[in-house]
Length: 78
Image: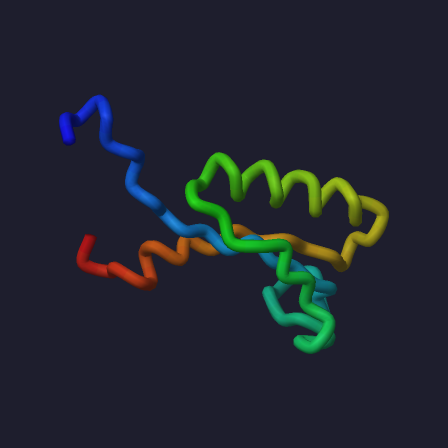
């Protein structure tokens, strides 16, 4: 395949969130209640999901969502 026909490299990202036990640290009140939004093939798609989830919970100051770069954990040498 030529460079123009190749699909973009899959760079997996996880979006998840939960209610924090305190605003000054990333520690969750209840790990069993984490909201696993999903796994996405690139950062742009993950960012859209993160924004939507964060906007749904904007009234709860303790609720936080995160994007984890899974591809960096799966291939740390890359």
